[in-house]
Length: 301
Length: 236
Image 1 (tube, rainbow over the protein chains, first blue to last red):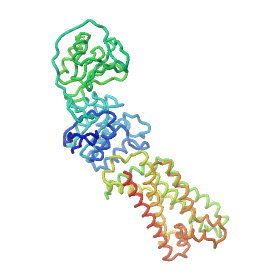
Image 2: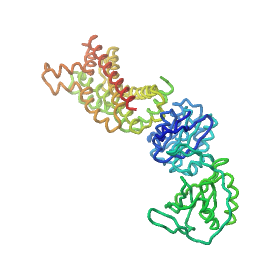
Image 3: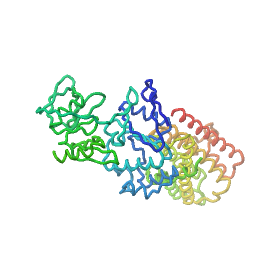
Image 4: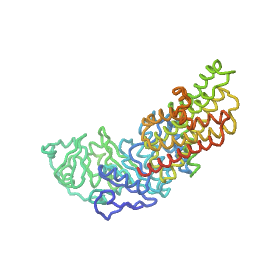
């Protein structure tokens, strides 16, 4: 199934999103386009799962699975699915369950659906790591079933949770996000603060407080706690400046403060995330090629 | 039409019906009314025989409170919560959904009606003619419920329709208490309403005419369903 980009962005473009059987895609789309994107995909005949969990609050998970299985005439077995997705409470009504439990039902729904084209929109907002593992389980099964999966997320780091090759949709069209790593040369400095701009103010940020830097649309953003600032530099430049302070280029578009790294999660064979030690537990993509190196660096820190 | 899908909906909605207090209590209302009428009736009616109007109104309550309002509420709830999104891949699937839901409300209507009639225990109720009149009246109420259910967007809006439909079509025989003059036009018009046809058939005074009028009501209500279908299709 091909979807023309111009239908989503409303601007002339020759680009197409190609959904192929047995293949998955990860696309980062701006938040403003999410709704149009969802409508376009639905009109094209894909089964779209967006944030809202559209189920019956009076019924339990088992009844739901049984109902969907019969509706789609699926050969999968209810008991197997309950076990596979670690559903512990299949008898309480949905109104008594929390969001992460109900989210599993959306994954199961995608497996049971007889639609060839499955689309998830922002599946990693408000979720827990266990569910991301289950999402990968679902993804593998969908691909085994020769279905095609498209994951659209508004945050780039979320798209990298799905797979290493990610595309980016913007007003300019569709482009592949490059993930080849640049070679870096050494240089160090003894500064403890760096200069960033926020509107009309210039702020001096203590380097130790920075959690990670990301490059996005040609700009470099500094993330500290809940705040985000633009830095007037390239990520390459920032890397040279901050390397001596224990920063590591874990991905082409990300520079992470190793002091703030809490854990590394392996989602699948070649998708990894670095978890930052903050209240949001931010998930930063980690390149496959850097997986071993970052561990060495973390041990020697 | 796909029977496995209709059965999937039937099983799911039967479970939901049992857990939805608003729907479930509607099944009990006619039964409680029957208990009430049977107590009062023994003193008032001749030889304990229940007046015809009471049986007519009881059928009207069953059809309007259970069949009509339940099917409308069930469809409206799906509309409101958008729970059918992703399930409606073709226009044909909505027919499976409606069929499944209709089976649930029909089952509940039969339970409610049979239980109420057994409590009252009238003679010569289950004649072939009367059962046909009940089926036709039921179809009319079911169609109105489906038609309005497809149009309304939330459960709250259904109450706007439940009361008028219940009073006009369910409690039609009560007009004789409001308008005592049997020759007035209001009573004459009311005598063409579905519940009256059922009562005439039950009384034994009914002929082909009553069935033709009932069939006409069913046809009109079916047109309402078709209109609602088209309206919904155009809205999407």
